[in-house]
Length: 197
Length: 197
Image (cartoon, rainbow over all chains, first blue to last red; front, side, top):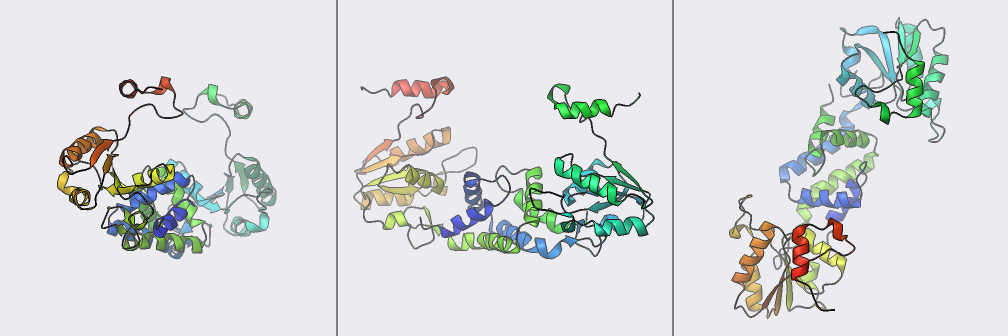
């Protein structure tokens, strides 16, 4: 075939998550039929992504400003920090709208399989914030996975005796979920964490 | 949120076929973690797509050269033209490897619902090729849909008495398919088109 430009685009598209060879081909053909304006906008958006976005020096969340909009927001509860592993988690909590405190983004979890250790995570600045910013509570919200649990336990140990309560998100049945579909571990955790009603 | 660059990219990604808001978000975040080099390559591939690729003046297939590699290939059977609606179909037939003739790409099908008429398709040049290039057979391979059938019948009428046999692809059961899953129309066509073995 004499379509190097198309193949080149397909190769880039296939690097996106959950896009295989066939989907990449379909997308590339669809892009051939898109307006020039839309394609230029797409290319510019990609080019600008990394130049515009960087990590907030306080919490490690992604931002386009000097500091992220949450760290700058004086109306939030500035005595509570919710610790998450990635910026995506911040968006999930913000969309849920139940939390009004600050965040701290670790940029991953401790992972032996991925060779990610303590020094690769944004932990030192968390300790500093807890020590210096009069933090009353640190809620650890890493994922309920082996790596997430390891990270949570490690952080809890590090934050011991720093003056803040360290808590972990509740485990249990997902809302709107079906008992039939819950796995055994979730059910066991739901029983363990039962509350008086 | 203060992440205009991310939202902008998500909007572009959401214009791709079968990519919804959630997938676009996931992709944009994945792209944040991609290497700068890969992102630049991606953006450049998009920018180059339309500047490099255009339609072959003979058959209407996409190409990066003056004429497409099939039209230029002297080893092919130059007395047969397979008529398809889109360049994707050419690739499908080339991958199947059963066909060694030439192609003609209509750039769509006659479609009342999409307001696509005869004048929007690459038909005039097909008639010219059949009349001038000593074509013995025109195989019409539009999709087996209402629009595809309409287009096929219209072309057959136009090409009548131009000296070439006009044929249509066979209908029937897909190879490796299961009788249980075949729809009634396909089964009826399969019986209608039965052959002696």
